[in-house]
Image (cartoon, rainbow, N blue to C red; front, side, top):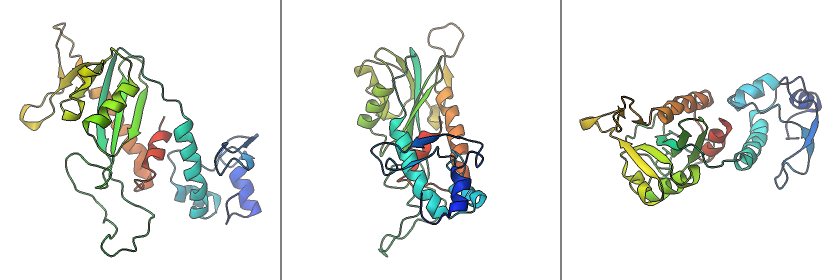
Length: 248
């Protein structure tokens, strides 16, 4: 178990009653630093609950708990299956999450820590501390695929969309140029214009009275993601993908 947690406190973390959780032992994820030990299921790690809050509840050190949280989340991120959405109609969109280098030392005076409230506007990047999170959702089935990426260029977005949807699917997006080549990679591409000069949120292209061209479903999921991340009061961009993956 991690250092800084005594036997009594350890029993509270690993015990079945600590989080109303598991009463059976299970090995750590194979191929990771956790794989060498046998432990109870990680009741100490509660998705959506800040590490500092859990540490106070378990009366242990936050840094000790964090040393377990990140490897566990990293394992879960890569172990969780992400098959392509089978829906014939899907939506794709992106959001930009303020996430700096929380928890990292800045010894170089020329590279000071960023103050709170990153007020950059427009499309963010990993480099300017506004990592993009791209997502796709099945219009009928509802599953969501999300991924933290470095940029929202054409190669990145096309790679994500083709992996998250099946060939022949209709993909609804906004008019960001990064989606411009989807019709060339086996997808039917429908767009709505979100620019302030000619803003539209939904459009009826087939004349049946239903405005089927929109990205409202995918955009609505971003509210859930922001609410999930808010209690952490800032997530390091180096670990953002782990936290995004825990929202399932």
